[in-house]
Amino acid sequence: MTRDEICSRILNIFSEKFEIDHPALDDDLREVHEFDSIDAIELLREIEIMLGSVLTQDEKKAAMDIRTINNVIDYVIRMAAVRTAN
Image (cartoon, rainbow, N blue to C red):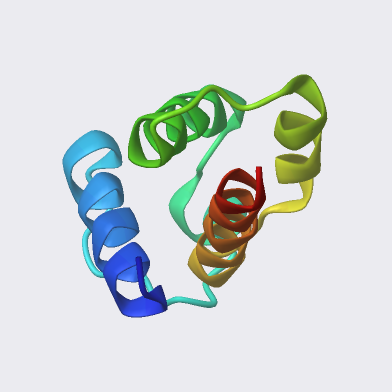
């Protein structure tokens, strides 16, 4: 998947699952959209579905610093690269 394809899918997830339409890619999700830890767990599950594999505990811990849509996209790109390399 390209960065644009990932971005489109992530924005679609935010719209459908979290009712956050058209967030700026650099908005702080917690401050601007009240994105909480329960939302983060659901987002990680959606990322697993997108990747077609379960995230490890270490990979989930690495997601704890995500604050923006751009961070989410970068995270998905990294996780997809790990899966492609294996």
